[in-house]
Length: 153
Length: 129
Image: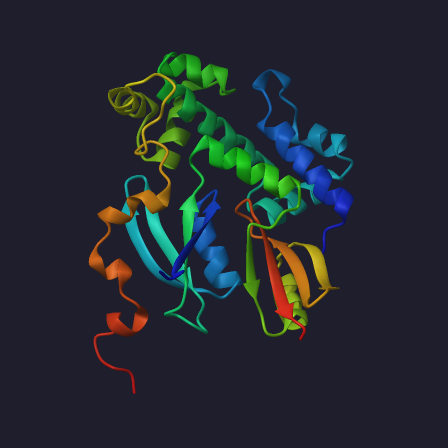
């Protein structure tokens, strides 16, 4: 699919609105209206460009924000849950665990034990992959030819 | 000194692996767990021992801001060379890939730009000389 320039701009604008503050909670339908695309095409095009539906994107943005707030350590899990726009602590906790592999309370404890200078995040929490190279097995640096058990004919 | 590894930030490593292998056609070379993330690299099947592309998580908030701004300004973060850009464009478009620029002649190359569904624009180019 070739995307027109104005559709590309509108989808970027929609992404901003979806990640926006929860107080300005807009329905998917009203965001589609805001960017002048029919709801059906909006969902379809958004997913084709960003690899997830607008709803999935909104959930992901909220969880990412929650993770950051938990790492800052200034709010309780319940406060973070409400702050990022979830109304149920249970579903927040489930979604967080599914995405990041540990419940928000455990993540908060782990983050607090690592953050020594407030506002300064350690690599383990927000890594850049290249920095993890030292922990890899030697096989990661073999090329395909060397990694093959028998020479190819 | 050699250039053997480069990286691209992605918003979801599993989704990225699918896109870069199943859709673009690269091959997975390495996948090792690294904390909550993975060391994940792909190579071109045409030159599997050549340069590796690491699909890095954009978990750092600064990385997200950078990636989003570049995307909105329509700036590709990587470029892959192809032998027949019209053929690749037709193949990828029919697989549901979204292009922001169709094959377009620009000086010594013909380029096309696509969304990798992981937050990046990628430029394909075919030298025309």
